[in-house]
Length: 242
Image 1 (cartoon, helix red, strand yellow):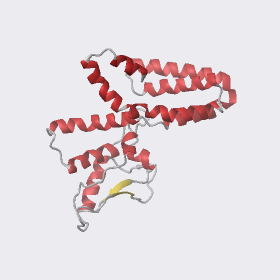
Image 2: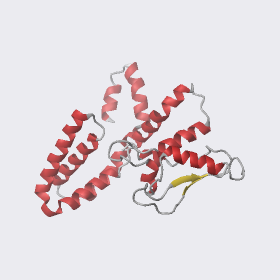
Image 3: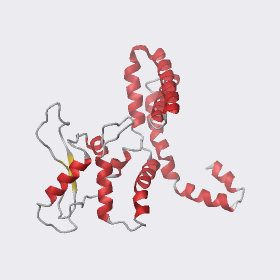
Image 4: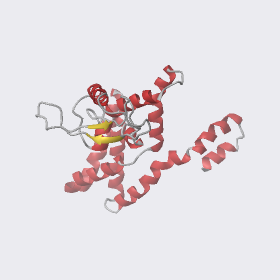
């Protein structure tokens, strides 16, 4: 806040215009810090400061390695391992347990501003192509694709956002699930257009090891429209940002 105030004293029209959206979104920008503060205090009660700092830096570099190209990825992987080796030398037989605890706590921090950026960046190409004239059905289809497609790389490779949210594995890719949804919807009775839709687990008989994992999370339709899914909680989309 002090830095923003000092910038405002320059009294430049362009800078003032740039500062306005920053101030209006400060709550979103600073949200991760509010979550990190109690987590840091909790971990300090269990782990000495120097060791905790090393584990946090190791997590930080590992986190960045998933977002970088090959050259920078190797750098962050190297740095992460260096800090892990340092922490292991201080913790000895407690290393694995405390490392898992620190990484789990840091992974739980939701970066609220990143969630908004993720959703906007994902939908923007479709909005541009349609010149802003996009229907609710199209948005529902985009939502279904995003929540049910499996990541091709990164720490969540092979998992779909909906699987990470519900803990239930999908038994097919998103195209097959979409076709199945359309087929099931076409045989259901018509209800009111405003009837709510809910995310319901759709269980099947267990599959063999050579088949895809058991369990499936799909939207049970309650209207005649084949593409009328209700929007998922923001948490489903946020899984992809972290």
